[in-house]
Image 1 (cartoon, rainbow, N blue to C red):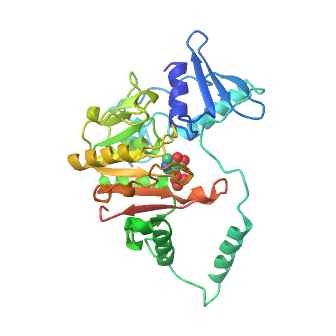
Image 2 (image 1 turned 120 degrees about the vertical axis):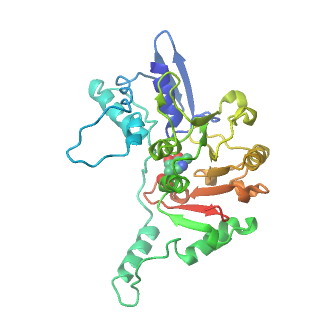
Image 3 (image 1 turned 60 degrees about the horizontal axis):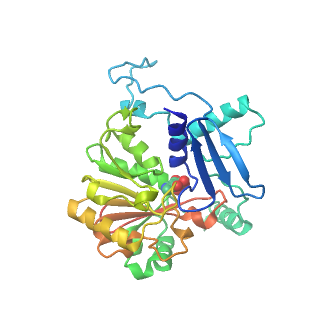
Amino acid sequence: MSVMQQATSISSSGSGFLGQNTFFNTRYSSSTKELSIKVKTKNSGICKCVAATPPPPPPPNEKQQIAYKTNVSRNGNMAKLQAGYLFPEIARRRAAHMLKYPDANVIRLGIGDTTEPIPEFITSAMAKRAHELSTLEGYSGYGAEQGEKQLRAKIASTYYGGLGIEENDIFVSDGAKCDISRLQLLFGSNVTMAVQDPSYPAYVDSSVIMGQTGQFQTDVEKYGNIEYMRCTPENGFFPDLSKVSRTDVIFFCSPNNPTGSAATREQLTRLVQFAKKNGSIIVYDSAYGMYMTDDNPRSIFEIPGAKEVSMYMMNLFVFLLYFFLNFSILISKGLL
Ligand SMILES: Cc1ncc(COP(=O)(O)O)c(C=O)c1O
């Protein structure tokens, strides 16, 4: 993997927004093999990034036996993952780089982390509810599997009132990443999947772990049996669907992480028509939908007919951005 490829694969899958905004401005020099990143900050300037460690080793041969201390076999698909989950790998490389260059001014393009304390009105409500659980009157056993009825009703009426979404269509969960993995369990290993390229890494990694993919192909830096839908400035960060092969599942993230690009109503209409024609399911990840200020749809359910072919994930940590509190909702009109 070249320095350029490393830089691209890290930034293209990270949680920074690199696309249609002017916050970052990256430039690669093939002669010096350095990536310059211009960042708008108070002390705006250019910093030079170089890869900190050599590329990870190639995946083990399928027939290669790994010696375990017990006779319990493991999920062989895990070995296909290149370096474990991307974000710990970015953190490892950053730590290694800092060790080597302690004075380096490193811009973190890895996992987004929280930075501010949780507001008092939230923690006090949580503390109050926790305390109630230690009283006879306030104690309740297991909660409802789908999430508190009242909460689901409130989410349905507050956010999806006009879209025909009802409380029973909503599943409140502990996070979108967990939902992605649980959906993969539901689909099983025999489905094919398409993903935007670049995209948030959890779709591909969960697909690999489920055994839906082939091995990682180092020459093209892609897994076999995944349909990568290229999204570049040239195509307006929306895939050319005439070149996309049919798959069972289409993971689609809008606004996209990492490009930041949000699909238009017309583009989403084409995507829904494409899924309908192919009998596919769209898993629509709208983790950053609440940031949108333009007229593009926040939910794919705004597109006529989308409910017949789509599931929708929204991450409610957006309300609480920068605070460490997160839950997500999964909405499906009978597709689960
Ligand atoms: C596009 C996208 N989907 C899902 C997630 C994961 O969300 P959660 O923290 O709810 O697991 C993230 C987090 O960065 C994300 O960027």
